[in-house]
Amino acid sequence: MSKTSRRRFLKMAGIGTAVAAGAAIPPIAKTLGERDETITVHAIGGVPAAPLPSYASYVLQGYVDPARKNGMLTRTVMAGAPDGMSDIALPGLSQTLRVTGVAVQDGVLAVHSLVADRSQLLPGESDEIDIWIDRATRTVRVRSGANEIKLQVQP
Image (tube, rainbow, N blue to C red; front, side, top):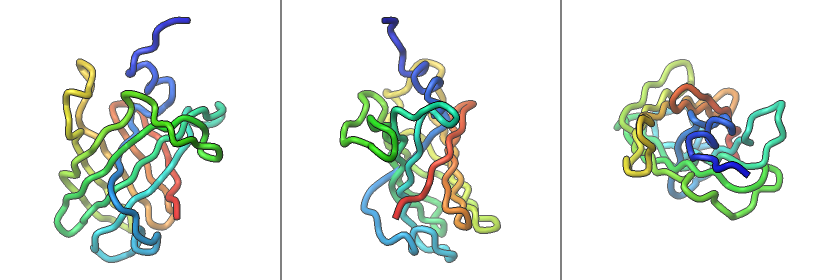
């Protein structure tokens, strides 16, 4: 069995661009509200992406404050597909993201974030993560590097 680096795993899983999550999770109505109040995010997507079968779950949770243009998110890759996700986080695949900018347009929040602990990054890996929260479709898209993953907002 060949050794797989973290970067290769993320590339294979299609989540090199995945991103963000955080603390306490209030009700979903507040999470995707139309006003500029602080919202919480709890979204999950399978990796790798369809049409391949998912063997892990990308979890993004935390909060974003559009008015102050800040927040904190955590991204974690858990063992098991979203419909059978375990409580086991895959080693080396959890990161805290610090929100550094938020723009709101047509109900979509464009969130720019940075990996809080840069020592977790591999040489050449960017610390910038972009996230789009679509209130209408209740989806979250995460971009990190050249990859993008789509997550579903959870209640």
